[in-house]
Length: 175
Figure 1 (tube, rainbow, N blue to C red):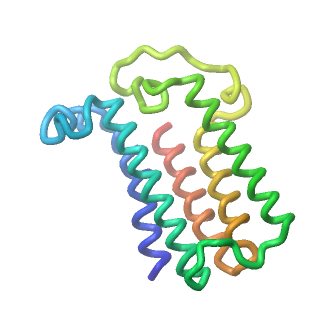
Figure 2 (cartoon, helix red, strand yellow; figure 1 turned 90 degrees about the vertical axis):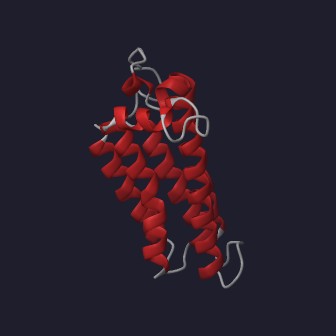
């Protein structure tokens, strides 16, 4: 049951982004209509939703660790090697994400091109390495967190696997 609840909550972000990417006019009407003044203009609204989705993600991950960590949020039973590998993945993932934000800015990261903003094509780092560096960065960070927090427990790979599928589907349907 916990996996189904986590899957539903974590899917909200990808569903929202696919909707905005595929139907930006619909999202724009929502921002100008019922949510006018609440979320702001389209790019700002998507940025606010991003932070909300990251909070949901954090709460799901912490809740998972708490429930399956017998009431503790601290990693239990992990080795120095697992913790180090997890932290390295997190650092690498965040480096990619910071690079994306640096190169694209708010308008680029939060789908400004879908809302009519002219954005130059980026080919410098991290786009010189990967087609979807922000998604790869997020997935690396998620895997790193669970390797550091839950490895070698039998549940350590469940949420990272689920999130990997979600990000792959997001990249596919937003492409």
